[in-house]
Image 1 (cartoon, rainbow, N blue to C red):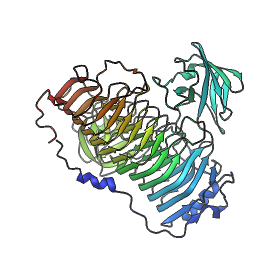
Image 2: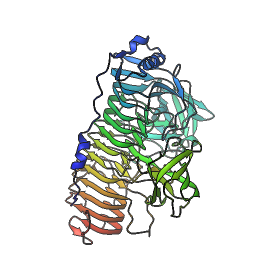
Image 3: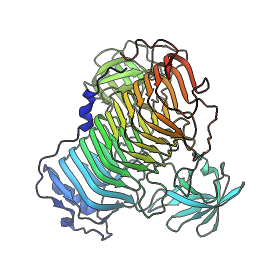
Image 4: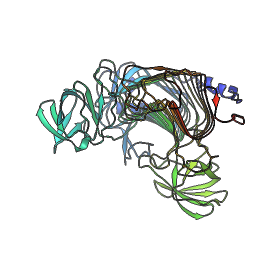
Length: 609
């Protein structure tokens, strides 16, 4: 059916970063006055070691196996523009790697413990850099994990362990850390037996409206909760802030992270922006064994913003994050002015994403309808003038003759990566599993999506809130296992392909295209399975769906298994379902050329040329 050959893509599946040239004698961190297990601040020694490697190619910095502690004292202070995180005028960075080529950081199995508010590792303007063989943890997470010891209609009593630090001020619970304190604004309920998000629950962003009363050391009574948690479960409290990612990579290329585990993060576990060719192998975001923790990172395990080249993520475990497993996207910027036909004033739309270079001379940009996220005009950048941290004036080689509306946005079409996501395990996290927004091709193979609180896979774009682009094409989702996704209230269907569209608009305009979902195993305790809008050339075939019995459905039992709205060339064939595909089993609106289990609503000729 699909005539496109996959051989062109096969090289990407086996590609890796080329091995760097042989390095000189390794630099030992212990030569700079620090010893593993000493529990003294290793930050100043680390900076000296990095300085010693500056300007020297093919260096390896080695940490003899052990524990190393890092504080902000002595760290570099930097003004950094970090995608999808809170803005800060200055940030402390423990390991600042800038301008290196062919550098390897080898932890030799060491554990790095970070204190207070600090970025563990920042990589900028580097090439052929490798991080390997280490784990990262924070001494104090930005959350409180409290056991529900009593739950009534009017109040909840919480028991907070001695390892958790908190304070009650003006009737509210504050999270207390090392030289910081912040109010608990949101709560999330976890099942104490499984460490999963509790069934049929979601965010409570109104926790800041509750009233807290001390009942004694480690005991707090909370009144005013909208949803009363189950006695014995754990209530996770957090502020919603995202101060720092754990590993941040910017304006770099050919970066490899191998055998690295993040146990705790005050933001995302790994974030790359404006970078090319990233390879993560055995990179994990996972709970530290033997600890009572329920949460790893405050935000996504993995995040890729405005990257290109090839992103390979393989053999990883990602669990118990307070946001998605992986999110790959570009950025839409708002068009706020047009001084002349070949000049546009644009600005970053989201308060957590701005300040980085959006476009350079010679790059290709596209104007996008904000309501349908479909492009309608394009040009080559002649010059980009930074007006301030949020606004840019673009000078274009070609004039824009189309009418630019206030709701329209612009994207950089040259910065979209090809993604290979394989042999990974995502489980027990809040929100979604995997979000892919790129037209350069995606392969999702041999992964396990395990008890997620929302959709396992989501594809779409957003030009009004997160301002995340672009539209996915050439996608293969194959040989994966999906086990009871959507146990919480973060989206009903196991797979959502839901870019926005304008009802009654052009029937020939579709946002997503060429998507194949095949040979997967689904175990679902409820339906719907697949919800699709504004998509053409979609194949859902040879998948095996069984009925899970671990949970009672919270979605309506009459919900369709499959839903299609404004779609074209859809083939649902050879699948095994536990529910009958009768008239209520599938729903289609504004759909052309649909075939379900061999029954065609229209002739399928002309599809998948």
